[in-house]
View 1 (cartoon, helix red, strand yellow):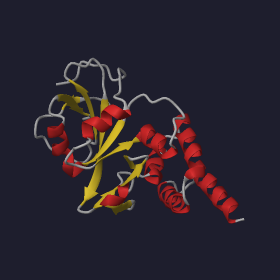
View 2 (cartoon, rainbow, N blue to C red):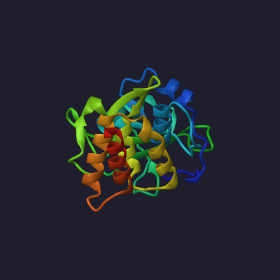
View 3 (cartoon, helix red, strand yellow):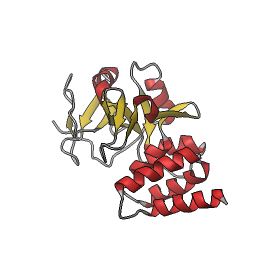
Length: 209
């Protein structure tokens, strides 16, 4: 069954509402997207169309049970939404879930499933990009967020104006390890070059002078 709410009809929950919903959740979660960038920066630099929450794939049924009072829809196939059935384990390839409370008339949360193998997370962009499961999440301003270099790695794919704005705002605040990790991931994903690689190389050169 498809949702009757248009895909562009959003009234996203606030950060405070999200923290209240997941405060005592029995699974790990993290802010992703623009809100994660905002927490890293400690300030807002632009508006947000939605709010993204990351959960590990192998904890998705705990997520579904936690949001049992919600209407949840899987992006299957991408570009369309269908009802996420009770106790249905979404396989690799389906990684976006949209949700709203039963009485809502707009989408309120976007949930994203992160890939894991045992105690490691890995990127759908390349299985070579991976790390310890616990390393994917960091707390910025007391809020669990997707680690900044990983978040920017995902944003690098689209090169939308808002993604470029996020990168330029974050670069001066990133430590050397984060910059090095991001540069390594971008070299792997974009061997023919990427504008952010040049910026990271230039930034490193300036710091070394």
